[in-house]
Amino acid sequence: MTCARCNGCMVEDFLLDMEDSSGPMWLQAKRCMNCGNVAEKILQHNRATQRTALHLPTSGTPAHDREIIHIGAEAIAHLAA
Image (spheres, rainbow, N blue to C red):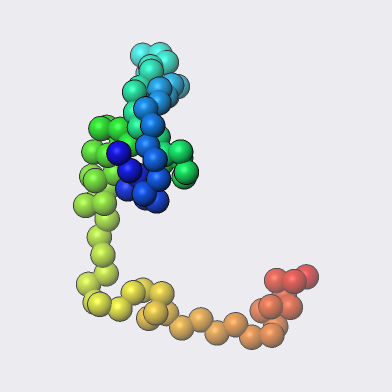
């Protein structure tokens, strides 16, 4: 199996979930040897759910391209101080 993020080698690993309310729980997952990406059924489901919950801008132009921010020398000098 290859990593979806970097195409690296995925190995079987055991992870300890310390946030579980019923106490620590061991999870079996795949972990990338290169970037550390973890592939596990519940994580993948949660990531997919979060992706669909995000809303995109209605126009084709990204929000950062529409905003005009003027930074003068005074603003830079203020930040340096």
